[in-house]
Length: 293
Length: 324
Image (cartoon, rainbow over all chains, first blue to last red; front, side, top):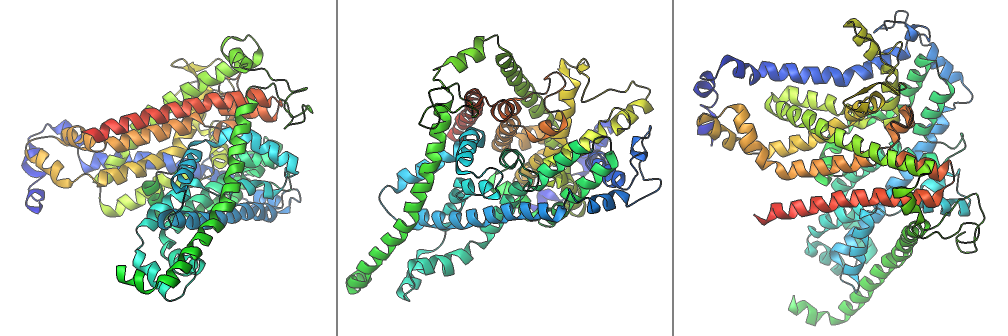
């Protein structure tokens, strides 16, 4: 293997024409990759720089890249805007995301474990039911779910975003697969030591699941935090809204004030964005192993 | 094992009961909850055969009947043959959804696969840095992405038009000019497609990178010793080996672009002249703005068929993949 790897690029490559060797060279690779990189980063930079401009400077033609007279004015405007209590909206988003993620992680682990390690009548049927439910896209259930919330009086309540998210069929599926790899001896040993079934789950199984739970948790958190359509349907009053809907509301009520809107975008998207960047490794791993989006 | 069963017959009986209790304690609430889920799906299914508006009182059971009459397949017949505004708009939305998905898929692959390959070929240190940066848009909320791109597309002060002016071109009202188009697709549609691609390519890139890492280096090296160029090694060895991943990526990209909503709702809300009205947007507007919930449920079902169609094709293709 290594013997093959050593003589690779030399003679075979030299015989090719200069043109093809340029397109196959590291230099060309870096040029293309860096061009893509700039295309990826520029919109972010534009947003950040614009947020420090005045509302007249963002209207300039041609646009300026760096702010000519950097100002924190947009940020102070937002912080002093009593109609935009950012902390409350952060609280709303955090409540929904943390509540939903904690709940689905718990139910996914519990039910996944049960499907993996317990035999009972109707197990296959129940599991098949779950798999089928998993295939139903959310836009199908959106309308009746809304009608149910309306009847329960949960429109404009954050609980409305919570009650339909207690169980996540995909999480159950993933954790069942993971639990199947847990050795039965471990569970039986605990039973002999007198542990109850619940104790076994909480003290022995749950700690073993920390890696897949972390993956599922961060993906779930990201999905909940950035969710837009369903929160927009449920939360129609301004005070109860979550961050993404507040951002579009702010944009529509401050048209023509580009710099201000960019500052709001920075304040609303960037803090969690940085957290997610920190956890990027887990997120990438989660995407790759689960295929979930 | 056998010995233990005999020795501890009594405690094992207790154990069986304990296990049964545990299972019951979980499955019972689960069954209730999942029945609710089934009820919701059933309701969605029933709604599409009604002319249902949440503004009307309707019959005693779930508001069905009475002022919300049963119309059978009328909603679907109207979709196919009707002359009403809503039927025409549905057909426009379906067409736009297909245009969007069909444009996004090849463009996405053309960006992500080569970039993933290049990224996989460079040094370890840069690889991590580049991958991290390419992945940043995936982590951004789609509303943020939409607002950023809206300011990029601004007809006066936006960067896109600034670049066009720099090269002596005429600026374009990207998100609002109903007449401008390119390759038979309106510029507004292209504009949202670009924003969507920008947010999304990092996702497929990491999937491709993972797949490319699974291609044994020796295979490529051997081919290149035998005189193959890098390009030939790529097309003849790497591509066939990552075919299952490519299929998976195609299907996932297709499915999510069928259901695109956030970016378009924020950037254009279907304008100009419904040129970016996609199915999810039409469903949303019908259900929650015009109170035509029966109609919207019927539209949802059409979208569901579209999604299921792609999923089934994927399963078929994957099965043939496994057979040889």
